[in-house]
Length: 87
Image (cartoon, rainbow, N blue to C red; front, side, top):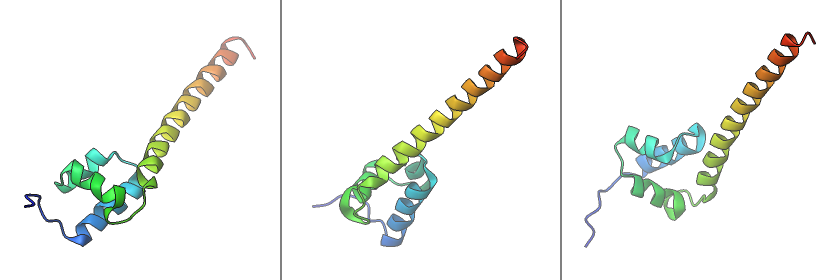
């Protein structure tokens, strides 16, 4: 017998779409909607959207953001050193 909470299809679709478009961690979106994290992972893995790439896309978005931040820092430091050296 299932003891899990029932979530309407519309809510599942909204949560999954938010995860796909926001790039936020699944845990954060689940918390915002008051939904169990495991339920959300189940929806992502094969329930509602059948799009297993969602988690990978979000991971890559976060990685890309971090790399862009690091590039900015390195560029800033390089320009600063060039300026300090008179170049």
